[in-house]
Image (tube, rainbow, N blue to C red; front, side, top):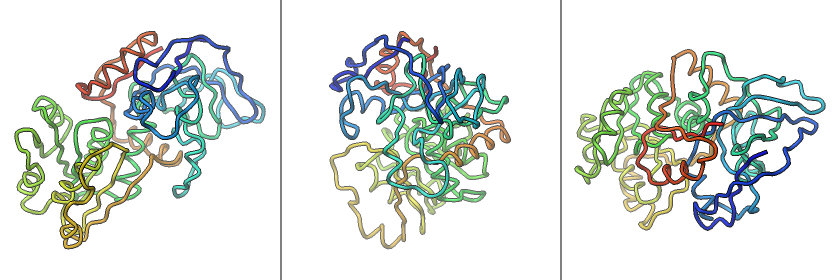
Length: 337
């Protein structure tokens, strides 16, 4: 089969095309033929050697995708040949609260990911895709969409009357925007580009702030929320934006820290505001299979779709990663087979 390896993990150029024997589904496993793959920031970080422990050069990357089951191993009853499936990237987190050991089986990191013509996945982790959802709607959910669902629904119980602040217009922020609006919340979103903010408004954003033209964007959020601030903040900016997120937060707000973006400044420059606002800061990592099922059901019920910026051919995967890394996109960047 054709596949891509991460190579030496010294940059995007390390992503190399190769051929290798197709894997075989063992007991409790399913062999899946990917149809569409979504890119996320840690795919780039992995190639650059800045995400976690170094992995074997022959690791197949990419943590999000949708595919068709083409074979099953002994004892598999969860899926059948021909099923269209998705899978959360923490393959052993099926239900219940987060456990640190879920990092031991992380698709696209500790185990081979979706960027190959065939991938073996644990059958228990797979979810049949509802017929109402297109490949493009689900291929990019396993990380960004599922994380946004966990943050907003499982942790914060977002609902009507809440104001949600999403930092930037990346895939997590856009997924959070759609989920929050589907549950009746008011959404503020930031970007450095007015064109992206205009698109965000077309997707339902109520408040938009350009942080280039309004460097004190936290004050602008406060002003546009009648002096109250955001009750839920989806913090995807990293260390250097956490202080501003606290400044933009409402009394008793929850700030959900997502991702591992590096930074240079102090994480919490204003401890006084953290205390006087009684703000809760919580980090989360992805979500469970049960949460993923709930997300898919909500997408069907609310006719939610996924914004796709551009789709590349499989053989052009390195170009797709370079395009994604340049950060000029709005919506998912995908690779089609």
